[in-house]
Image (cartoon, rainbow, N blue to C red; front, side):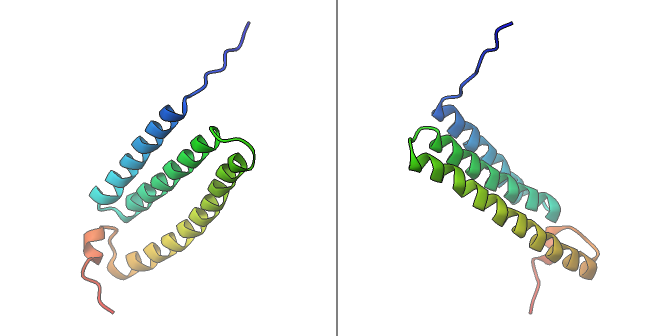
Length: 109
């Protein structure tokens, strides 16, 4: 049984990354649930990572390696952002007893 390798063209990878970014942006802008907004932001970060990796496949040598290392740093930053973001959301929800983002639009110091 022969195995076939399916290769995506760089343009197809960028179209997929753009679609994922659009879905994440739409989710972050339209939804009111704070947790869903954070998931939309994470989806946008993953779309950018996919774009970096897609571009790195078209380059040779050190430029290719750089295109694969940047997403590793982005993933580490996204993990820290998720921890801090969720901690802030937990504190906000404890104060207002809601996860609706509109309830936090009139916050003052």
